[in-house]
Length: 409
Image (cartoon, rainbow, N blue to C red):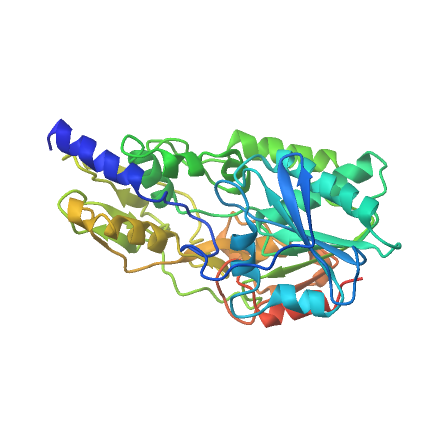
């Protein structure tokens, strides 16, 4: 392909919305949130405050931290994810007299420790503005659960009273998250055309969250240095806050039943002239290690191998439409030869054992363990709830939300 055509393709990629592997609405919001009662400008973020029914001011605060994504948090995104879906969580909180404090970050892919400082500032602000002495409930969705976990634990090591009675997490990757190596490799392979996908995969938060990471398409998967440093820092502050009760929910089942995605299967295949030959596969097992064949624009067709990893794509847990999000973006460029087919749209993103902090995610046996048969004491949480089916990561359901609501202080 000529240099001019390659430049045209690069310009088209960069003019399109970025490819972002994250949960929540993929299209612009169709409904706008109400105006907040208050807005707190915080170092590294913003909190939007919505008073509960009958409350003239901040009375019974529930701080809920945003999760992993790219760019700044917005109230539009949060309301569309938390209110305008299948279950109106924010309305139900306010109906019960709870003050909703949506904690957003200036950069959602920044280091968890950096965003932890924003969470700590929000906790201090809530205490200062609260009417009365009702204790706080503090937690978050996905990465937001790790941000607030670290913030509360660090405040305790500093002997600061966070006045929080309940810590909660919603499908948070306490033992790590997973993006297929095939998708990471593709992100880095198209960096010359558009670096934004690769930048997300190599962001501080991504490196800290993912159990296995590659920084370049040629790399072998491993635990990233930034994840090791994050886990060391978490240990330094005690791992978990000790004062509040610790609860968490998972968007995966407790029976050990997987989501039906089989290992070593083609999940995304190129059809257009510019991408024919690309084959992104689910994580294989046994003697098979091929996760991807890559061909974009040029005739080169390197193979990517990732041996020795478990069949995590099909594990019970919260799912992400990683292959589907990429396919949808590429098919919008089908006129440039980037049409693809996507036999498998979703993969496990946060294994159930990770969300309820009961097992690591490095082996098939741990990933597919029957959690329901384990002692609840095996979990680092005081109490947890698993979904009745494997569903989308941080999907807001009545089943999980009502369980949390019933445990608020």
